[in-house]
Image (cartoon, rainbow, N blue to C red; front, side, top):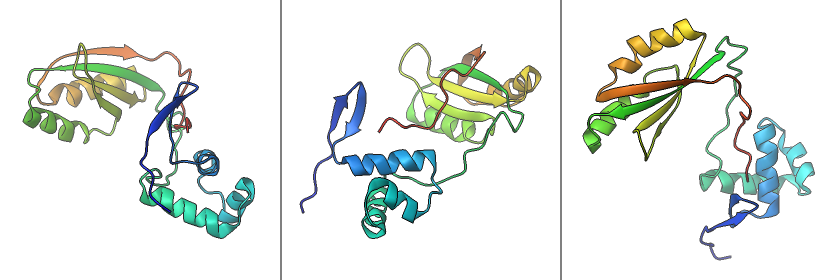
Length: 169
């Protein structure tokens, strides 16, 4: 069987990998909901025996579609109820400066997400903290000391309307 080239198509506004058949998509959907499901149950849920499901899982892992399995912790149960988005503008956006910033921001445990942005600013951070006082401490002692920052703007989230693992497969 020849190897197909991965192409993306839009279906109901969601990008889909055409190399995934409906069974692969169902496997991924089930794993996103419960990555600890026994192989026997997964096989039964998709209507195959264990061996073909194991082969499909191996292929999905080797292709990089499945990148790992991990526990998903509840930040709320851990007392991290305060979410702030921080826009960062940089004084230097040459590769060396970006690499230094990236390395430094990865060392801050309160940074839940960090994206390089094309637009009116350079980076967007999602900071998860206990409360406003903790956030102010993170800003003053960690974020503000990051290299090449010229300005920041912060936006406090009032409520999470959609917060989920990626399931658009």
